[in-house]
Length: 182
Picture (cartoon, helix red, strand yellow):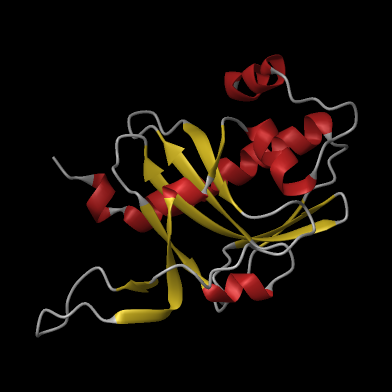
């Protein structure tokens, strides 16, 4: 049997991105007057995968993902993200059996504020060594450990972290339940 995780990793990456953006759009539709705008860059020069805008806040978002059983402890964050207004990283955990999303982890600041400084994080290295077995540094990437990410349990919490509260503060368990019913 074919291992889709290794043979179809780009497919999985796009699937997770579409599921995540779909959940955010659904939340915006149901609770935030459908005010979320989504744009995707043609060129990944500064590390962001998607640009999200709502409530007057523009977020350049670097998306990361790993299964809920993965032992990943560090994510590589592009230093160019710090030059973008309100840049952030969303690390989505997912169930590899049914592709259900969550929990989510957030590395960023309050809506409208810049990405926390990456100056004190180690420069990331290539995962594989060169012909001599040396893992060269990747000067535009920093390794940010899981302890620097804030846990966000559901889409309403994620939306609030990105853009602030919505009208009437709809972050409740019934809203979360309704998001995952369909």
